[in-house]
Length: 388
Image (cartoon, rainbow, N blue to C red; front, top):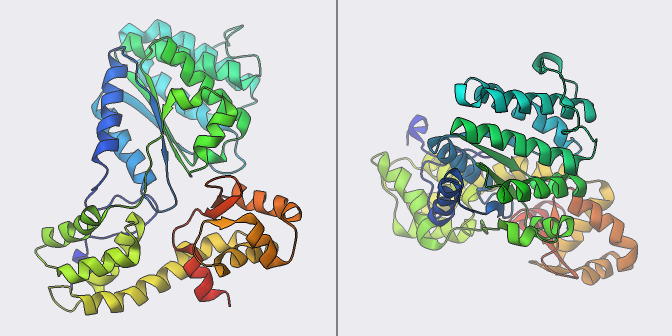
C-alpha cells in the first residue's frame, strides 16, 4: 500500500496516530493540574515503565494538557552526567521572562529574577546569551546547597506565577539519571511548593527503579508522588492502536492479523508502531492479513536489531555484554543474580560492581532483592538471536 499514507511512524517519543489505553493516567494528570491551579492539594506524578512503553509520549500529552490549563511548561530530558542546575537554569529564566510581561506579576518576577541570578552564581552556570541582567538577591538561592537553593527558586517562581494567575509545570524525562543529591533537592522543592499551595506541578518519567531511588533520596517521596505504571497495552487497546489508524486511512486489517501483531509485540507501544508500519508497507492491498504480518515481522525485527536494540547493546563494555548475554541464555526474566553469576563461573559479590554499572546505564533493573531483568522488552530475544 502507499507508503506515503502510512499512518505509523515509530520513533523515540513520536506521537502515535492514536493514543489509547492511557486515559486514566491523562485524566489524573489533568485533575491534578486543575486542582493545583485553584490552590488545592494534588500529588505530582512519576511515570514508571520499561523502554518503549510510551512514557515520553505521555509526558508530551501532559505538557499539552498543562498548556491548555494556562501553565507555562518546561521540558527536560535528563541525560547522564549533566548537572540538574545547568539544565534547569535556562528553563527557569524563560518562564520568568514570560511572567515578567504580566503586569500583576512584575514585582514578584523581578524578585525571582534576582534569585535566579544568585542561583547562577552559586552553581557557576555559564549564562552566555541568556544571562539575567539584574543584581543577585542576597540570602536567596545563593548557598551553593542545591536542596536549599532549588527550593528557593521553586517558591520564587511559584509566587510569581500565582501573582500572574498562571502556573508552572516542569516535566523531566529519564529522571533515574539524576544523582541522588539532585533527586533529593527536587523532591524537597516540590514538597515545599505543595505546602505553600503554589501553582507548580512536576511530572517525571523513568525506569521502574525510579520509585526506589526516590524513596532512598527522601523517605517521604512515596507520599509526595503518585507512581502510575506505564506498561504494555491490554489486547483490546493494542488492537485499537493498530486498527484505528489503518481504518482512518480507509483501509482494513483482519482480526487474525491484529491478534498476531499483539502476540508478537506483547502489547508494547513502540513495537506496535513498528509492526504497524512494516505491515502497512508490506501489504500490496487492503485488507492486511496474517500472512502479511508474518512477512512484516522479519522486517520489523531486522530494523529493531539494527537500531533500537543494537544502539543499547553498543553502550556496554565487553564484560558488561558478557553479563547480559549470560542473562539471556537463562531464558526469560526476571533472573536471579546468583544464577547469572553461576553461568559466568564467578561469585555474585565479584560481579556486583559490573551489575551495578549496567543498572546505572539503564539496561537492567532490580524488580526485587536478588533479581534483575532487562529494561528493554524483548532484549533477551535479541541477544539470543544475535549473540551466539
